[in-house]
Length: 264
Image (cartoon, rainbow, N blue to C red; front, side):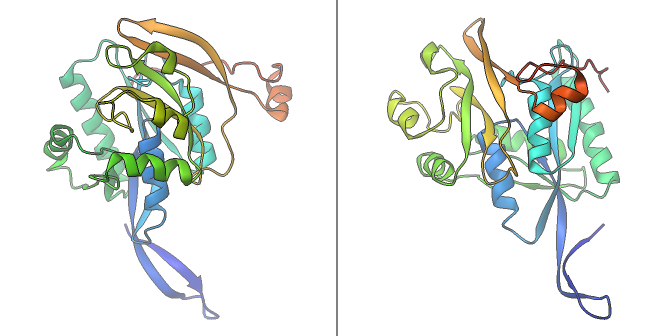
């Protein structure tokens, strides 16, 4: 399937049309995937047609980030893109994960998707794993932020208007009080020596709530701090806007109930 971009002339034909490849973007709810969306939208040869997110089907949250499904759904609405959500069982073995994701990729291919994009930065073993898993899938792999120096990348994100909060911190390498903090220049300056500015080694994970990739901010509130072994999570919750609250019978700024979905 080919997507065409351009303007129609008086005869109804596309003038100066550009053929763009449909791209499904792996979406973690964090800054790296959000910045990938921003960069891909500046490249006319690609058109992002959906966000692919895997959830812990029992917890209704993004794995590792711990971000609620309702917040990811709000991100997709703000990005103006459909959410391709994939439910994983818990516990989930590697074979379970690979089987389920293979099915998701085949569905994408059947829908006309030609490329899958990932927000990996420099961890070669992760990139090689993705390439191995998808080498016979018929999908082209894209890595829009690969090998960009992470200090420069973090600064570009902040200066470019991306707004995010730290959703998860690994206390084995970073103090607990960093969780929930704004991802900004003050945070970068406060990170201890040896901590990657983008948290690419797993030091922290983020939740993006605003930026040039969104048409409007995702309104959220801060919930409790949750500890799971060495990891600490900020339990962010979606706020209900006034029209949504009236329609649902909820008070404004209350948490939207989480829907329970069967794993697919």
